Length: 113
Image (cartoon, rainbow, N blue to C red; front, side):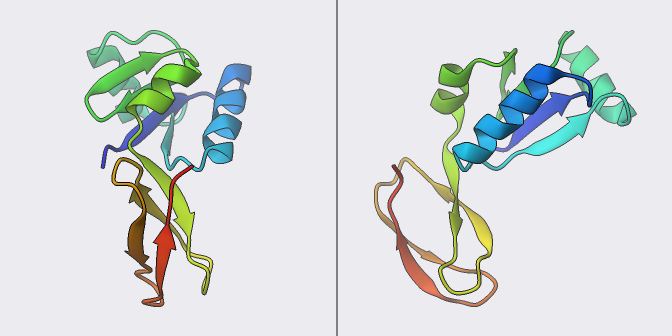
């Protein structure tokens, strides 16, 4: 599954909207605040990204909050274990799958929307 990294700043209103969108769609992401993370800032510069929010999804870059493109590129969702509540990434392109929680070993069926 592709990793999603979101480059942000604390003062960016669109970043806050994007984080809410990702949460509402059960999409796992790693946030990198470029005001505090120099390596993240360098990674953006290396890819000629000049604004936030910016998303690195696998090898693809999305600059700005483009909902449709983000949903098209993301290949996972977060599923919640019905027994212990742990969240885990599951693929969305496999149809209904049988998932096993890594924390409590509970087996459950997950069907993406």
